[in-house]
Length: 222
Image (cartoon, rainbow, N blue to C red):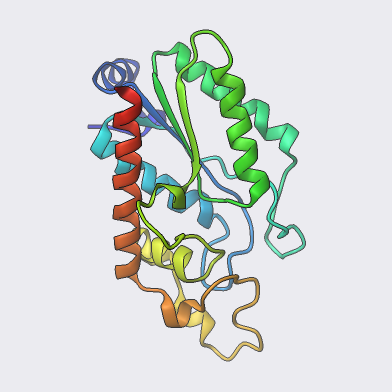
């Protein structure tokens, strides 16, 4: 069964909404994530998480948004950050359209999670839900769906490296952190991924996040 919104035929989307009126909206960024992770890490990982969550709950997953705000990484090579007024109304508009199509629950999950980004997504959700005929929007950073502490979020360190290592191992090149660079941990904030990251830790984290998202969706549908 298809879950990718952009790949569905109209009748397939109608069937998906009838079976589970749940839409996932994955959000990320384009920015420096160390020498070992791809520039689009945030959106790539959260899109993969949403696809797996939709296989559990049903529903449809929108293409990821590779545009984020905040985080202080604008001056790093590769980073392309935008302003909140350019994205916030776009998100609210997306939520409005999804509700009109029949979705009752929208899960806006951001894999890029500085305070500015998280607050912006939540404001967009509140703006939508203040209107008649709105859907219930669950807006959160991915780590908030994990059912227990510690917070499994950082920047290109233990957690982000582990998550992508599990989801898309072909995109993680740990050797680039051990090839004699003067500052191999440049732009990495959190525990040293060379010591603390693993695909197994990523699997455990992703499964916990999916479990948490599924519980939120079921509660919202009730």
